[in-house]
Amino acid sequence: MTHTHRNLTPQSKDADGRPRKAIASQVHLVERLTQFLCDDSLELLKQHIDELAKDITAAQTEEPAPPEAPADEGTISLDRSYILAELAQIQESRTLERAVYYAKRLLRGIVEVKTNGINDINLLRWKEYDEVISDSLWVIPRRDNSGAHIAEYWGNYVPQIPHQMMVRYTKRNDWVLDAFMGSGTTLIEGRRLGRNCIGIELNPQVAARAGELVNAEPNRYNTVADIVTGDNRTAIVQDILHKNGIDRVQLVMLHPPYYDIIKFSSDARDLSNAATLEQFLAMFGETLDNVTPCLEKRRYLCVVIGDKYAGGEWIPLGFYCMNEVLKRPFQLKAIIAKNFEETRGKRNQQELWRYRALAGGFYVYKHEYVMVFRAR
Image (tube, rainbow, N blue to C red):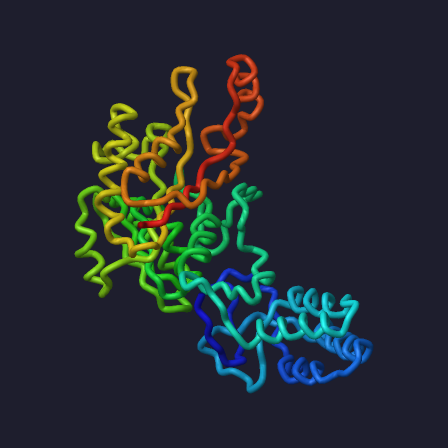
């Protein structure tokens, strides 16, 4: 674990995964909590905690200051609900020793940072990260269409997927490679989160459109978004990295076509044009062999993939792709099932697909996989 101390200055929350519901506290939490620890009775400590909770509740809610903004001396930026919940736990304590323990834990979470070394999540304040998903079932009601994110491109994944991956497996200023860039969803989200990104896209028109979308997203952290037009099976990735002054990336995102469900182009190099399932998997393996050597050891690869039906048979495409990855030096860390309620191919046809399922003895699949691997 990595331990560091930090200055008590306003901090942005969107780049490390916490929700935008911060308060800029002017009540000098550190000083007050330190004073409370000198209380010699449980009743007095609870009285002081109650006063502090009322002050925080009455404080004006503010947007977190950007990192380049000047800090007011003695101020901190915290999530209101997190702080109030921690104070409530102190108030519910039955002994002075337990109340002091909770107060010291809160104080430590304010003045120290403890991470696992690969992300910016402060484990001393882990309860504050309520938007970071840690379960293997993701029910996302709707895609994020804010800012430059769009849904006009067939087959692009919801921005919440790269968001979650980058928050969990990268730090600000780390590098992310998306080898099936499409409309630039990963690069847009990387710009929002302060991650540098490289995207490889086979289709020149799609790559150009992605560039427009990425450039439309504000770049508050001055990150790099490098768009490369080419075949991810043959592109010289090391040259691309060296052009950006790096040797390795810290996260690789792969969202390949789901075999031939959607034909993205007429280019024979496009995986959606593979003649057979075996050829599709061989082409996917070539992508793995070309791009994953640039991944830093013990860092993470994310593959987003779904299954398909063919000839009345469920084809477990996701697990076939998983096996391709596991033929390489990777270990499987997670298989996440992410829901989707409606695809463009099934839009406004729910009743028809339900009838087909009942008549044909199959189930309408409403999920895709987010598979997470760590490089050995």
